Amino acid sequence: MSQPRLFIHLRDVQLAEKLLQSPVIRQFIIVKSSDSSAWSEQLQQQHCDLALIESDDCDNDDYQRLLLSKVLTEIDFIFISSGSQNELLDQLMRRGAGYHFRAPLDFHSVIDTLQDFYQQLSTERKQVKATCSELDQFGSLVGSAKPMLKLYRTIRKVAITEANVLITGESGAGKELVANTLHLASFRSDKPFVAINCGALTPELIDSELFGHIKGAFTGAHRDHQGVFAQAEGGTLFLDEITEMPIEQQVKLLRVLENGEYRPVGSDKTFTANVRIAAATNRDPMQAIAEDMLREDLYFRLAQFPIAVPPLRDRAGDIVGLAQHFLAYRNVQEQQSKKFSTEAKNLIANHGWPGNVRELKHAVERAYILADNTIEAEHLLLDELNAGSELTTIDIPTGIRLDELEKAAILTTLAKNGGNKTDTAQQLGVSVKTLYNKLEKYQLDR
Image (cartoon, rainbow, N blue to C red; front, top):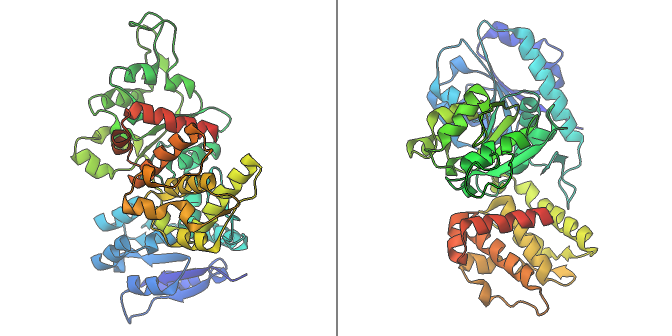
C-alpha cells in the first residue's frame, strides 16, 4: 500500500523544522514546494492527497488558481496564517478547502489534524477501487472518486454537531441523499428524517404544511394535521429547493429558526421545535439573495455549515460503476440478469451527464425497460436526448405497460431539461404539483 502524499509550502524555517521532526509527518511522502514556480502551480502537477500551506507567503494569484482549479475538490488543505483578513482565503474555506489555523498557533492541534488525515487517507487506500459496481458507500451515497471521499469526511465531521446545513449542487447531483446520510450519521438517526419540497408548496398551505393545523382552522380542515416540524420531532427536517419558496413566506420559516417556536394554524398553543435543519438549493445562494429569491438572514440561519455536492462530471471514475450499481439494483428487483454491452459502457463513460446522477439513473431505468438481456448503446436513448427528439419518435417494443411509458416520458423529459421541473411540467402539459406527485411515487416504488 503506497503512502499518502503531503505537499508542504512553508517559509517559517523553525516551524518547518519542528513539523518535519514529528513522527506523524514522517508517515507521509513529503513533497516540498520550490522557488521554481508558484506553489499553487506546483501543487496541480504533483498529485498529492493533502497540502499544508503557510498562507502569509501566498499572493492573490495563488488563491485564484485554487478557486478556478479542480485541485480544491480533489484534496484537502491545512492553511496556517498570522490571522490577517484575507477574503480570497475565506472564499476557499467556504468552498470546503479544509482547515485554517491562525496565530498563536496550537502546534499540537495541527499535528492531531495531520494524524486524522493520515488515518483517513490510509483507510481509503485499502478500499476496493471503483470497478464494475463495487463502489464505496457511505450512508445513502455511493462513489469512490476523490470528491466523494472528501464529501464523506465532511459529512462525518458535521453530522455529530447540531449545526444547520445548507447543501448546494446542481440538479440531480444527490443533495437529498447527502441530507439523508447526514441524518444517518448523526445522533438523531433513531428519529424521523422528513423531507419536504419547498417548490411544491402553495402559498396558501405553507403554514399548514410547515406547522400543521387543528380541525376547523379553515375550510376543508376536517381533522388535525401535523406539520413537518412536528413530524420530524427529534430528527432531521430536509427543506429541498429552499429558494423556490416565495420570499414573502420565508420569514415564517425564519421565525421558527430564530426562537425555535411555532404554532399550528388555528391553535393558541405554542410548540418548541426539536429538529435539525438541512436545506438544499441548486442555485448559487449569493445570486439567489441578489435576485430576491432567498432572504439573506434566512441564508445565514440555514448555512451554519455549507456542503457542496460535486457534479457527476467531476466523478469520472464513478460513472460506469454507478450505472452498474443501478442496473444491479433493478436486476434484484425484477429477478433478472441483464448486463451492459461494451459499447453501452463506453457511451456511459463518455457522455457529459448534465443532469448528473439522476439523469444517469433514469437512463439506466429506460434502457432496462427497452432491452431484453443485454443493454446496448441505443437502449440508453442518449442520442435522442441530445438531438432533442420527442418520445414519440422512439421505437418502443410492444407489451410495455402504460404506466411504464408515462414514467419513461416523464424521466426522459426531466433528464433532457437537466432536472428543471417547471420546464418539464410545461412540456408534458401537467402542473408542477402533479409532476412532483409522480416523481414522489417513483421514489416510493423504488
